[in-house]
Image 1 (cartoon, rainbow, N blue to C red):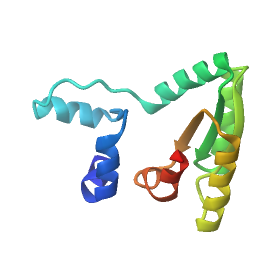
Image 2: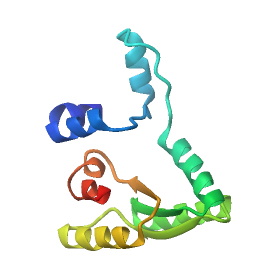
Image 3: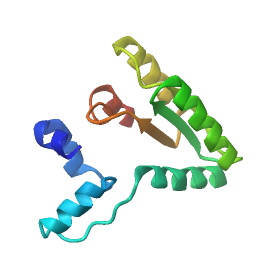
Image 4: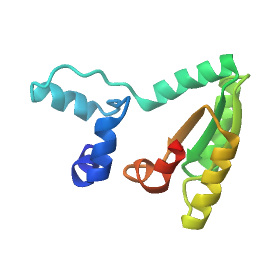
Length: 136
């Protein structure tokens, strides 16, 4: 993602304006120490997602899963529901779609209004284009 941020001005702006940027890569941790930029903690995205799922499960907040392949998404849903019995997964959609399906998926997400939207879409696609419109 660091490389994508340097190549894409819009992604760079979003990254600099983000409320939270995680260091999910051990390479970034090592580079930060090597370049004397200070010590940075590695926070794997999956660890944070599981904490949010625990919170959602205990508060009744809803979750929507977007991305990955259909069979991976179904297995992830099964695993999350086993781990968090009260978790409300209100919707899901795989990450392979064209523009017309993008619009349908975004409308579904907007209508369902989940408190948490988890993206399993690689960089830069998860940070750009139609997924940015989920903010609205």
